[in-house]
Image (cartoon, rainbow, N blue to C red; front, top):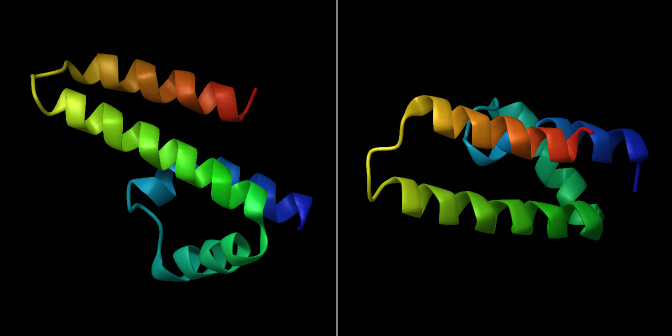
Length: 80
């Protein structure tokens, strides 16, 4: 496990979950996830939470600023 690779994954976690990374970046992070159980676990937790929020938000019209505040708060937790 490389601390630099873990930090890079965490810095790009939400872009990865949102499908905003290039195929090369996805391949790079996939390789890291195959070797790093801590990052894989973190990804699983964040994916579960993201899907939960998306499911709840899709049931009603949520103002974009609310979604941005949630995203900012989550990113602040990852990058204190």
